[in-house]
Length: 319
Length: 268
Ligand SMILES: Nc1ncnc2c1ncn2[C@@H]1O[C@H](COP(=O)(O)OP(=O)(O)OP(=O)(O)O)[C@@H](O)[C@H]1O
Ligand SMILES: [Mg+2]
Image (tube, rainbow over all chains, first blue to last red; front, side, top):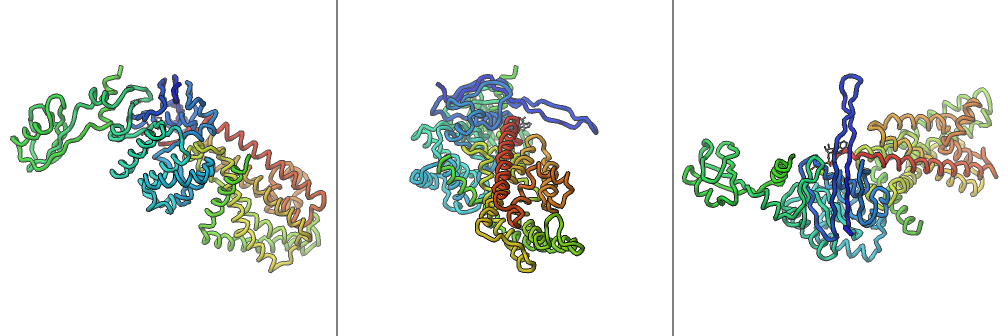
């Protein structure tokens, strides 16, 4: 039996908008519509989509915070919003955009309090905390009140808080938001280890394609509340992520360059963005072609952005 | 409910205490204000006793004692409107409480008891001591009365918490919970016997007040302290408070469950 199951899940929000002095219109926002999928134990699932796609709304329904307007949800055999407290013992949840630690307390105090909430035995707590401190490098700020932490420090603290009770499932809504490159890498390694060594199932949302690439065995893409892609990362890149961008800095500003296999998509002073298909040419050939037409000062290659990939898939799958 | 849960309550209460202990300047300013108002209220009410010796069974020193106890209870039971829970609901931070394996109201009650202990000691005792130095206060004669008073204040805090929780939970239905908060605070001020003793009310209004939980927050503990309730009456008084505490907590829990069902977490 799958660990997480959704069937025909929908969530509507009713918002009121003022329309004149005394009138207010009711508008229904369909945040999630007719969502059906299931997740097997041991998966690291990437759940992506553009802003407002319905990712956070889905995570809130899976963790029992929101009650769906329609449909059936089961997480670890429980109905999240009916059996919220039983479920809470088995899952770890983190919303990167929210503060779940106690604002006034030093980080270590928050963790200590959570230990009592989840009834983690003292010796296991010591052991888990030691490994979290190392993996997430908490020591430099573990005695600092949460309100004084930087975003990246707080996120690391929140991750530790979500893992303290050895959950079976982790729901992470933007776990790498605000992290620097080193911290991002640590968090990814940490999640992979939890998954490999303890079989933790992870569902994460992100706007960082690298998270998906390094971590996820499966990805789901939603847009406008609908599932539009379900598969692994390689298949996704094969299908949609084939266009890359060469960014060139020229000595002098000049009009859009005409180069074989490339298409200028943006010009900003001496800097130009040239999109190209991986199948047709490569960055080296393209750079050589540019060099014959202008004096090149610097160049970089941009990988496809998650939003581009998502947008392309969306355009392609739109009825 | 095992030892584990009590341990958690204790841990939460400790942190509730520590949170307020972190702002000593606010405490000093608050004590100053409460003390100044204590003098004003004491002198205003004492003026009534120039014409006569007793009002509704109160003599001058019982009345002055009543005033200073009231000043001591202001922060202890949080008379003037509380919105910690409403702000969490409105901001969506309540989501962070809902993912924990503990009922958010239980956690917030435990936290509030810690807060109340801090406020009782640092906001309650100082004005009371000043009052006791300047005026002749009526003090409970035997240790059992002191004990009953302490229990009664504890119950008053829980009753007040239940009521505060209810007017905070309104935030599930409206983005502006402050209307409910002000009404709630006004009701507590008027009917708890904080402004004037319930016994000074016209009979019909006193009867009305006693049909509400408000006297349980201020008047009943004071009645025990100044000896208006004695012997068996003390137990009856504590029983009334206990019933209100349970009733309000149950109502709060039911309302909270309804609220969560229609919760929309704003943002992120
Ligand atoms: N409390 C709410 N009231 C009204 N509409 C809401 C509410 N919460 C979310 N929405 C709407 O539901 C849709 C989905 O929002 P959601 O937060 O799930 O998006 P998301 O995929 O997490 O986006 P992001 O990447 O920006 O975090 C959006 O259109 C949003 O405006
Ligand atoms: Mg989101």
